[in-house]
Image 1 (cartoon, helix red, strand yellow):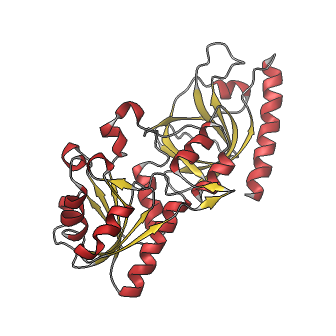
Image 2: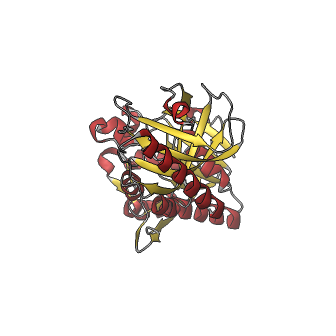
Length: 310
């Protein structure tokens, strides 16, 4: 897959293509259906399959106070889209000028003029152009004028409800990482950098890697989770992750800390991703450090068992 960061990076306009258009935060199963439909269409007609998206969620610019936390970092989103098999990913810079384009201008100058769209695939809930005046119905109304075909896909149903980025965020905020994974079609990944903490884990006999987010991602609800940790050298390790205020220890403060199984290396300053497989329990306060250590041992055993079947 070729990545185009900004429309200006496309030096020569595409003569023809099939384009999937959307925000694609999370690249959930509905997004995957849109992109796969674009790939299928492109292969039938012998043209490149492109994905067009933005370098930020549009709400971040238009109403920052309402901007949702990201499900995927830009790098994660790009990897997930690449894994689906598209030929090109265009990540447009979403600024004030772009936000004020009329739907007609976007279709004429970008989808047709720059990308040569002969087929366009979108979700039925997608909106674009100034004031979100453009949508699937608008595209269908002008497809003959611009000589392209529109495929508008209905939401994909998961566990009896439509898959959406909003639903995935809600599930993560509730700690329901397993159902969120079904909506996404892949485990939720939390990316960050390993930083020094208070070394409370060492004191308890379970040294942990403290994660500091590098992007404005959703953080699952406080609790204990079974996770796969992927290090920046490609190694993947099982672990038990604790998110919360660590109430048993006075003034411990909030942390996202992970005990990595059978691992004892210095990884401070390195990048790490946590893939959340299941929630083990809520965070709770224990009467003593001994009681906390005994529960941590049970958590680790349970996390190992869950990951062995994941």
